Image (cartoon, rainbow over all chains, first blue to last red):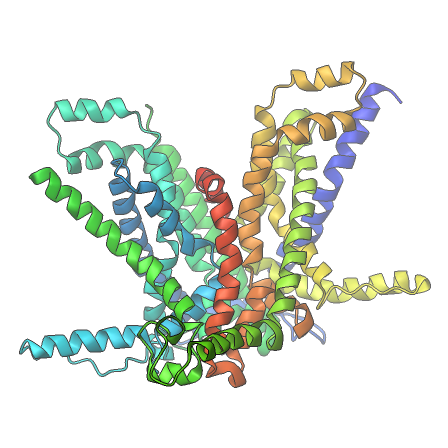
Length: 305
Length: 306
């Protein structure tokens, strides 16, 4: 064998496992999902080509799809904005080299590495309407405390059924904030630590306050990482599944479905493979567009040091 | 004075969030020590195991109750087998992911050949594909793959079983983790000096020898970062385990925890639920404590893992 051929063989041998696994178990199934979305199929019998009918159904008035998508977008907006806001605040505070910064960083990040299923179950127990449900107990304390002060407000009807289908989409928002804020904080903090100290010194000489420094130095210089964080947050809220599925005992309702749970239910409990795949395709398009748009944005506004 | 006030305000804000993060976890641990009788009598105080409880309630008895919660979760509810399954699935997947990705990434990073760039983009494009898209087709693909494989293996008295098997799950996990891992490792192999390969070849190493003896060991920092993020993702994975594993003996920890929590016979056994949660959280906490430095320093990499 010449050296050139043996090098080619080497490259082929090393690339082959990844190529075949990726093609066979990611790329081809991905393409097949597109085909499924154009069919009517119960998973067993013959599939029937129906063109874009599945997609037409998704966007019909009153269909579950738009409702579920709305829930994803609500979570994205409500939880996402709080997460980004809190993460920026905590990162900015820790960036000032305070004592114990390491402790805060380690503790804040931790919920992020716990399984989403375990986090969901933890919040099921926190929200419990039984005697040990600590959130309801806390609300009761607040309420009786306020009444003792002679106020007529608040008048919550306790215990609040947080886990009721009607409220579930709202109840998962604090859970998500609790779970992921630390991740984004560490992400932003890493970016902040890359900013040269001299910028801040110059700003201080010019008499800039802490907030002005944050607004005019920190924020513009971490813009790129901020965009990465936003995209990541959008994608993960679009794929949201575990908590709803567990909290709803595998049977979400009109009020609590998100895209991924709808997909699962349509395919694996109603055997409507075409419709479920159409949901998956929409999910893919949204993730794809979100990634593309924000990558373009971050590149356009790249700032040179 | 103003500075001191500012400092205090910062600590108050951070301290409040610290409490919000740590308190629920401590609450879970404390409650895992209560008996069902204590849940009614003493839902919010320190557990009787610490305080001794009301009169006539011996501490030894509280200790028995606490142990009973864990024993029920570990043995009766099969968390021991969930745990072993999770270790097997995560461990085998990680080995597969790292080896296969490192081999591909090394060639993509260090060799120039026609179509190399296109192949790299092909792999990376997989990061834009949400796992939910491939979930359904994979489900049906596994059915006919198992059938075809079993026909092929029949003369040897073997059968190929991809549904409801740990190996099927490992196969999926490896394939789905390739794009992220190849991206990270290709970036890493590019930073290694090319002279190392030439030196190795001159010393009589083959291309394979260069990779296994020189490049792979040198890539350790990149491999560790990739492995940590894959570990967290796979150890906690729920959706694919839910779809592809059905028998109780093959469930992984997240799947087992979810299904136990949804069974009505356990629903009111709160001591068991809390103990199960502790069992699931503790290993993660231990790994996190060991690796948190690498984890937080590689965070910008982790954000790519969508």
